[in-house]
Image (cartoon, rainbow, N blue to C red):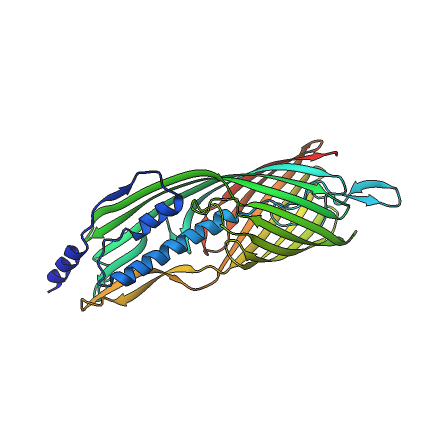
Length: 390
């Protein structure tokens, strides 16, 4: 009887090797890999719905990771304020500030800076499930009395990004900054889908796609509402313009807005920073937070440690098991989308070095602190900033 069941499943779900070789978008390549199913579960409608939901969840996770890449703080490394007693500008802080978390200090009236930031990521997990080693099970059939499935489909994905972000800050007044940041993202995706029946492996599908495109343009305004030797408080707002390509998962496809508040404690060699924000539109509605400590061990060096995260209204992927509708004693596992929030938390550590006059060099290492969403083992970044009129 068991052999007959297996034979029936194989006859209904025989796999053929297919490959996507033509130039396709990243979203199309991902959808092709997820929906190329061969394992027969006896419920084609549920399989199709699960595959489409999985494709959407993967696309949103990748889009969330790329379209909202952690951008370096819009605050200039050099900040100034007007001293009414002396009638001159003076440094607003001894610190060059953190990397990703905003600080309350502004650049100063008429001050401007230009920065270029590079960041690399090789994503290895999605909601805690490994992506690269071919162990991500999308569909499987198993007998109830056997620990391992006799027919299982797995997905392997290699997703890598290199991004170069050009940003600039202008001090409109002593308390108001306007800034902009435009990321250029180089994304490559390679994947394969494999069916394994009783230890015999058959590759069902393979696909690859690579692009280099502009991502969404970020515009930011920040106003300092209070300041002193104790630190400062600022309010700000973001606009993310949909300049990125949604089909290639580097653009949200719609306008995103964000409002935030920043608190900085201290203006000397040691300072603390906290920010909180609310986002609407774009990839997803959500909230975010960030905190940082920056220390100056020397006059021209700042070392900072940061903790920041976000909670987005995105679903997550999970594996569920249900009885096979047509075959007694057989259970089917599917990878499906669960309605839930995604909370991602990251940590970063690095340094900023005033290497010459108005030049500021920085290097950072960012690590995921939980397994939510699309994560990399680590993300290195480096930037160079030039301050005009220093």
